[in-house]
Image (cartoon, rainbow, N blue to C red; front, side, top):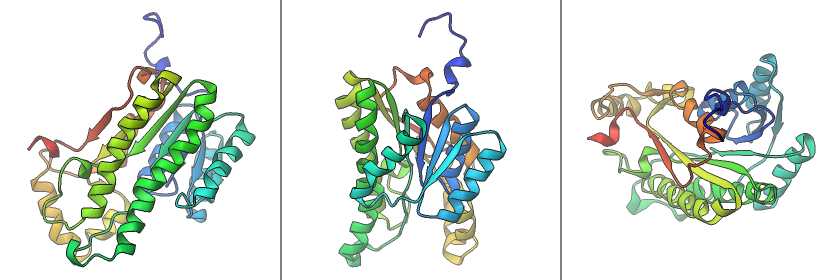
Length: 264
C-alpha cells in the first residue's frame, strides 16, 4: 500500500475469492451480497440448500460469480473438501467469513450436556475448523483474510437471558481470533471478528412476534442508546473492510456494532 493509492480502490475485492458459512440467510446472506458487490467471487456454504441457491441466484443476477456448497461445518472431515472445491473451481481462496452459528436459551442448572455441546460444536469448534482449513491455503499463498462472527454477547451477559453456552461460545471466538491472529500474522494471514448487536433478520422478526420475544424487545431497546436493532446493512461495511486491502494492518481485532449497547 502507498499513500498514492485511491482509498476506494483499497476497499475493492476484485479477483478475490470469498466463502461465507451460514450464507443462506440473515447476516450471512448480507455478507455474501456485500462481498460480491465489492468485487469478490462468493461461495455460499450452508446446510440450507434451497436458501443457498436462492442467494446464489440473487448474486448472479447482479453479475457476481457465485457457487454453493452443502457443507455442515460441524463435520471435521468435510472442511478440507469445502476449501478444495472452491480452490478447484476458482483457483484460490483469499477471504473466509466464518458466520454459521446458533443461539439457544437454557437454564444453566438444568441444561443438558448434549445441548451445551451442540452450541459449542457449531459456534466455536465450527469456526476453528473453518479457519484451520482456510488458513491451510492462505498460509501457503502468504496472504488471506479470515473474519469470524462473534457477538456483543462475547463482551457482556445479556440482561435476563439464560444463554451461558451461547455467551461462552462467542467469548471463545474472540480469544481464538486473537490467538490465531498472533500465530498467523508473520505469514500474511489476518484474523479478525465482528460482534453484532440484536440484528433484524426474518428469524429475529419472527421471534419478537412471539410472547417471549415481545417481552424481551422493550429491554433490548431500552439498553441500546440508539434505540433500535441493527439492520443487516449496518454490519456489511465492516466485513468488506476486514476483507479488503484497506485493513491489511489490522489483525486480532474485534469490531463491535451494537448501537452503543456496550457503552452503558
